Image (tube, rainbow, N blue to C red):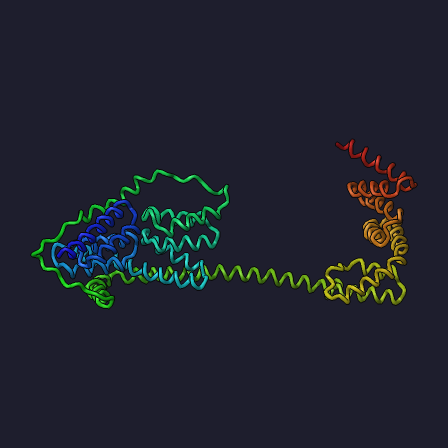
Length: 443
């Protein structure tokens, strides 16, 4: 008898600890202690009822119902569990909501495992809109938000968890992780005064079950129903089957919710497809541009065509034309090593002969008043040979004649800097002074 009394006292001790934890909003601690109480006394009706309430508060509806079904079989009268089950059974809307929540949460888990985070988040947001205190759903939202580097949304979900279960270990761990990942500028001061809202949430648990009172010894206890099969059958027969009958008027609402869910999923998939299409079009445009650069079109020659043209001109000893074609080629875009070797070889052979030809071609365009062609050709002459003062000087003159005063000033300054003491430098200084005086007058 003493050992039985000792076991019962241990059960009472852990029950009271669990009740204290539940009253303090430490639901994780409450579950731990109430399970310990049931370990010592599996027939402790009050511990089982309170454990069901705690599970219910955490959003774990199936474990809550299971505890109440077992409790209702332990004692058929004066048992709060019977009232809890009756409330759920007579509220088909609530039971349908629970069914939808479980279904959507499980689907969210599937999407998350498939790394389809967008669809998972849609399901989870539906879940917490129907059952905001579903801790596991809030924790999964936090994890997905952390993975997406959306730390503010993660913290919002975690703080909601801690409002329900103030010492939830996973929420505390994830919150610490988000704070370490956030930039210092993004971290905001937290509101420390949450006592009022927490007090309202504590109220429901601590007031439902009183301090442990030992059942009178002359009351007969029902035999403890062990095993998940019995629990499953009881939950199905006692709750689900009658409630499904009563919930027939709500089947269309359920269908509408499913249609909304499908539409949201399709909308998300459509956005993903639109993004893929946009990226594919951009890649296609880039490829077409690169292809045009390489092979050309009806209006322009491609890179390889230009290189072939330069080779043909060189073979015909038309060095100026060959250099002109080479200067239109971006060497970095030549794909193969062999093509680059051909380009470099032509450059060494052609440029020394082409410098004078390009210079004369530019001067001819300048004298004919064709300043745009003069600018283009003289720039090429400078690329081929940057020591010809005439190319620089007449480039500056062409810019001025073409009305581009800013570029003319820069070109005159280049002549003065690169070729000091020459006639071209002195003439450049004269033209430069005139342009700058005109500019000052206009100001």
